[in-house]
Length: 322
Image 1 (cartoon, rainbow, N blue to C red):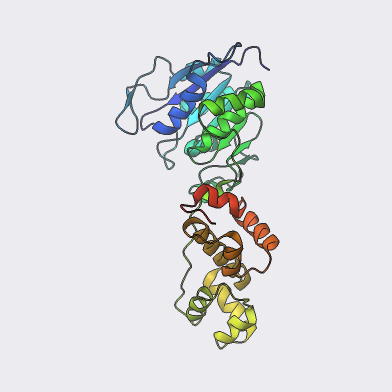
Image 2: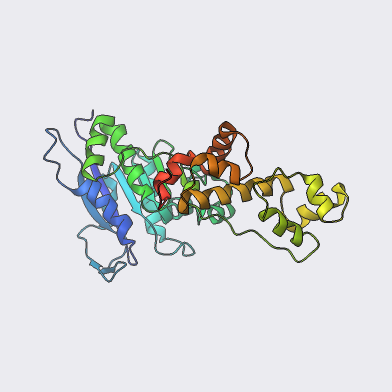
């Protein structure tokens, strides 16, 4: 356990993401009378030189500017106001200087774009909100973007996914500094699990099935109406009145994937829908989605979604299966 956890500087900026900012203040800025050892010291550090407008109409004023980051052991970047805007060079330089002298930098949600613009994530693994992972990977190809995890710990650099995943990342940092027991106590005060199961995949909405305007569209409709049946590529090709080879080529051209991969995704989408909104038990869901083995269904679901069918129902279901 640390004798002195050091100073945590939390960035504030015009257009501040209020929830992400609140997460950092809640975890690192509140007094912890339940502990008989030193807790983090914290400050709010201003990126912009004028009173800053936060989401929701809140105004933030700080007595510390970017020069204060020279003293920080940890710097929190609670989102960023505009992913398309290059952050101020003064901020990027200050973060690079802090990283080079050994400070830890933790980004929440879109805050990763600040670290990326500074070049600090080049050659490293990182994550962000699932809505932005493709954009991050395209704009910064030297970063290995992991779209599923809740956070990535690269040593000095910790990046987290969508807003609430910032809590997971901050608790992880606490566990690094103080151990899991202390992190668990903080999590209980937050009224949340110290470690959430699964990654981001469980939160990504099921994609709507594409409906191309060519000869395979009726086949797709037929498949979606018969997901509980044992379906094969040859059956699909026959339904399309094509040879299997032609059907495979046409399907890939239209859908960008193979019939087997698409069919599996549609079955997973249907399974998620049933687990969220029906009273079917897991075995009935399995059968309605075309699986004949519960072991296979659980394994495929976990690989696709990141958690088990039972955990998914517990997290997102509005009904309880008898």
